[in-house]
Amino acid sequence: MVRAEAGRDEGPPLSRTEEVREFLVGEGGERLDKYLIGPMALSRSQVQRLIRQGRVTVEGVVAKASYLLSPGERIRVQLPPPEEPAPLAQELPLDIVYEDQDLAVVNKPAGMVVHPSYGHKRGTLVNALLARYPSLSQLPGPRPGIVHRLDKDTSGLMVVAKNEPARRNLQKQFKRGEVKKVYLALVEGHLKPAQGVIEASIGRDPRRRKRMAVLHGGREAVTEYRVRHHLDGYTLVEAMPQTGRTHQVRVHLAFLGHPVVGDVVYGFRKRRLELGRQFLHSHILGFRAPSGQYLEFEAPLPEELERVLEGFRH
Image (cartoon, rainbow, N blue to C red; front, side, top):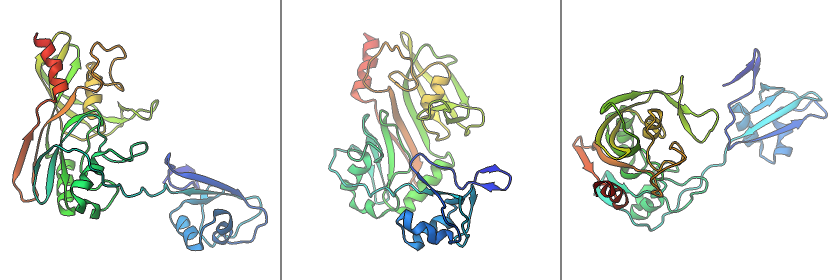
């Protein structure tokens, strides 16, 4: 809850997907909930629910449903974002590395979005998973089975839960940092030292809201790295994130001055290698299955990335 000033409570923070409506009271004497039924085109129970949620203020103060309005008072209503429709099943090719009754491990290609979002309603990993595993539609939420994510242009291994107990189990492991994650990245420049730990908090970039950035006061973020090869003006590196912040590996490597090759968000504007994607691949993934058995998988570099490395060898 955000306090604007002493004694004034302006309700919950407004997200970019929420709608705000404001009304100026003409004649007073009517209850707040009854007044809003007409202009909001909602039932009385719907209006009262918005009021209970703290989404209705009168002159900047959260009011009760029984509040008697006075002439000239300004009412502000924050409508919650619309509920996301259930994603649809869609037959798409999937590279299944492993599966059992509780989970599946997928080798996601670059260019595939993990779950439906604005501008990406179809063609996502979730759409494909629902077609292969129809029972996923019984799981709660708009992202059935998803316990972690890879960026659209990052390829490699992901684990998917097939049931609710497995989802909770895997999410707990990710939250506790118990999952082994090794990424392969080709970065700009000659990275030194040959191994190290990047400890730099990450938060939303205040100037460019679609980006993340290393920020004082951001969320703790830790990435270990180890150099595999120094190439001609580039470095092939293994990155092992110990936390799970959005864009963490990309942000941390760019913070060192060695952004991922092909990264159009955090990379250099003048790039010498044009890949059509970023050179970042989820190479190794290890975790405990709900049965308690430790499982570890390895996915080789996709052909388009292997060809880039071959070019340095000739």
